[in-house]
Image (cartoon, rainbow, N blue to C red; front, side):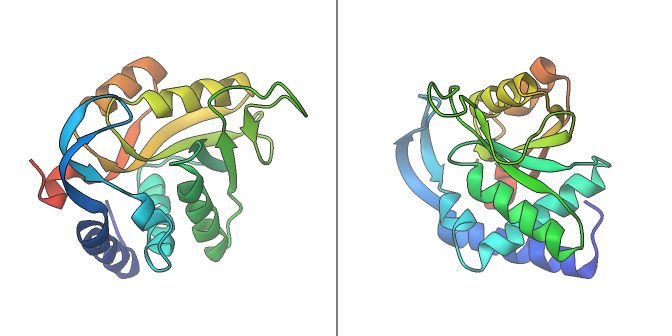
Length: 190
């Protein structure tokens, strides 16, 4: 990632906070149903008073460095919700307009009957976000929902990639790049 000194400092501090607050060791069952020897609880980061701002700065810089132009950022509720909000606020701090959105697992059967909530994604360039991904299932569900709502998905971006095949699966099934700010190796996880 090409970085300004501010972005490099934000990235270094965010990595420090992830290692300190989000990595939990011990046997756990992931949302994918797979078992792991550790859990990366990124809600401890995305909802943290200091780390949330860093998430927005780092993710927006990563998206920009990849040459991806976005108008909207969000993903499957609930892991992506604070990530989308952080990116929206980082863009606003930089004088840019990036809207956030939320994708429900299924279309509502009441009210407006929408699956994608927030400002319309129709005809707009969208990055689908996730905090972390194991199998890519949440991101793929979000991509499908956004595309049904008329959004142009230009990338999928996650804070931490677990290096378990999500990148390859998402890129193969969606045809868009998969970006990640940190790999599990950077967290000292094997």
